[in-house]
Length: 170
Image 1 (cartoon, rainbow, N blue to C red):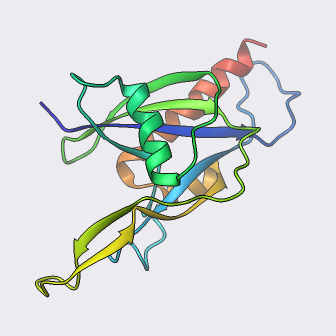
Image 2 (tube, rainbow, N blue to C red):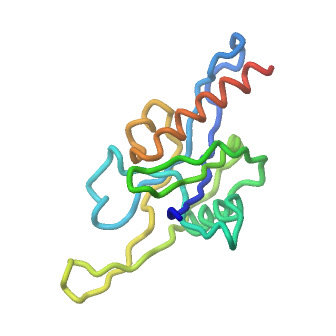
Image 3 (cartoon, one colour):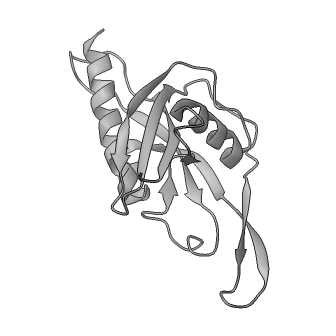
């Protein structure tokens, strides 16, 4: 069975909501820059949806996504309705289930990033603690398309379609 992850992709509408049927509104997403020495000097392809691994036999994907949001960002995921956007495969075979929610009212005072330990420098025998993510921010969809790791970009495309479908229902 492939390794499974689950995450929450918050969005907020930023453009004029008076649109034609099916138009996609302008929006931003909340993404996080991956922490640790490998990602420290990288920008494009170094951002992620707050997410983490879970065991589907022991925990629902949405419960895991909420848990990982809290662990990575140090704040609770907002209490909003979440829609399952889909499950997307990475080239490695890992799969991520992404939930989306309207984060228009999500404005935490500060994030408190979770940490992990890593032998650093490699083969030094020294263990160092690094943040799981070292920055989180609202980013417009166009910028997020190049910032997100390649395996998560299809989720952003699916969110764009989802928002177009929702605007068509108005």
